[in-house]
Image (cartoon, rainbow, N blue to C red; front, top):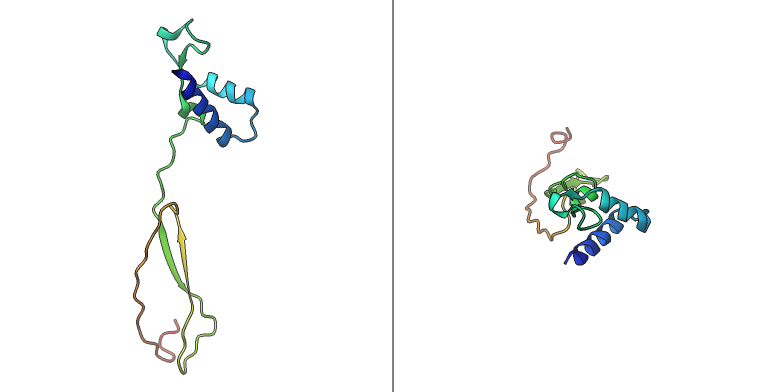
Length: 116
């Protein structure tokens, strides 16, 4: 039953460390097992597979919450007449899931009063 677990671990390590050759992957696995007295002499490693240690020992960071930024990017805003304006919407952080943003834009502009 260990073969599928070790095979999956090899695949994950090869994806995480693409420059490692097969022997380096094997060494990562063997050097990161949790030694168990009950397995001593019964298998090559004498321990239990530990993927977290093989990946470097750190816990994965929590997923980042997405952040939406809206910036007015109209370099030629006009004080007179209609001006449609231009805005840039940017998303950072966790981008793996779909995100819907609802917004309302309103306000007024007064010549010389809102240029701060």
